[in-house]
Length: 127
Image (cartoon, rainbow, N blue to C red; front, side, top):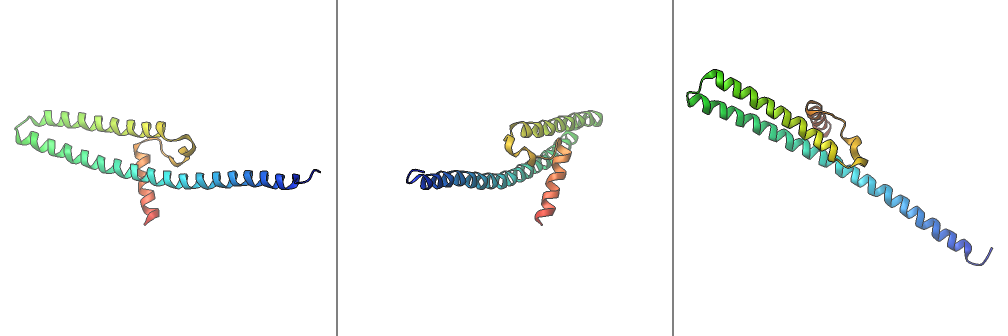
């Protein structure tokens, strides 16, 4: 073997091992970051849902105080609830669609109900 070839091989092995270890550490850090990001997004969506529910109740009270027919209020309220339910499902499907593919295993839900359960489970784990 020519002089210095074994030092060169050790150098190449060091470069490869550095790349492998740094990639694994980077993936681990990003996985942790994406898990926290998911929890924060679900928290925000839960807060938005509660705010929408309060806004609907406020709308209902205003319609009643404006002497709108109770049947018409009921129809409007049901239509608003349906639109909000559609909005929630679309949010979850868009979240899953645009989530980075390497971290999709973090999103172990397919609809709003499962996402809320996942969020509540995370709260229990963190307590």
